[in-house]
Amino acid sequence: IEAPFSGVLTLYGALLTHQAPSVTFALSVVFSCLSASTAAHKLNTVGENVGISDLVIGTLKELPDITFRILFLATMAFLTRPFGNGSDDELRTSQCYVAIAFAVLDLAANSLLLVVQT
Image (tube, rainbow, N blue to C red; front, side):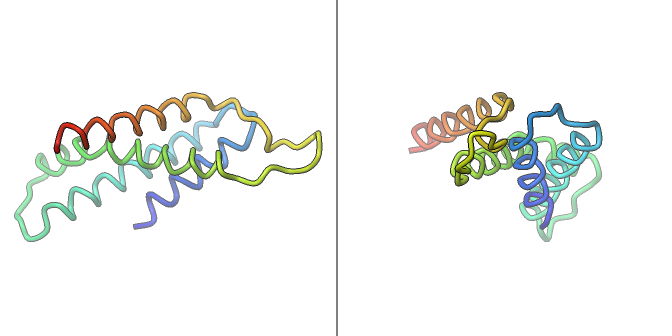
């Protein structure tokens, strides 16, 4: 249950800094996304006898959706944060444009899915 929150908080911290993420940071985000994807698949198959291959395949099917949601939440937290009032405020800018691009892509993909499903 804590994996999505851990991923969101880790990414939010990365959005606030101007430094490239470390290997530990990247592994933390990857494991958060994998853990959340595994939990989502297990919730979808409660009561069923699921083998290890089905678990791996189901986790990989859930991974894109979970990753986009975590990126979207972290980006929205970053975009809606209060700005500081100093000119030397480190929170005013970020160099993590890829996460913002993924959030926009997620919003577009979810909107398209809504249109297609209706």
